[in-house]
Length: 105
Image (cartoon, rainbow, N blue to C red; front, side, top):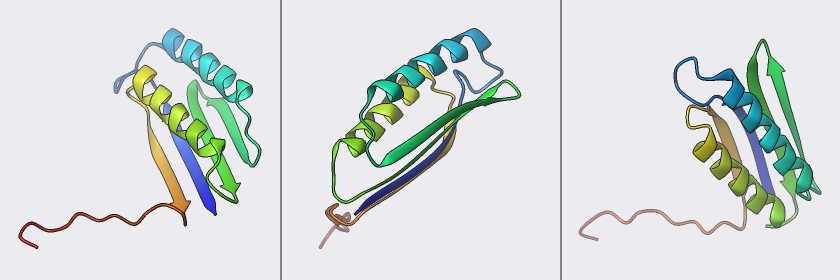
């Protein structure tokens, strides 16, 4: 099973930012989400008092394209809106457990 949840505040900079840039990029994100094939995932992009917030929730039986789409979405946001902040939670029982090995072992 793969489960993911994201809550992200979108902004183009860590200060006030440029509202025109945010509105254009939010429209691009909406297009990206609308063009994608999200079977067992849902998204919501809202403007609240001039601030854009994106929420994404997904729960799929196995690794499918939804995870790749989530990765693409996060990469797009971080590249186009570098001041964005939020929380992304992902749980995947098929993800290999790899931990750093301490030096000298």
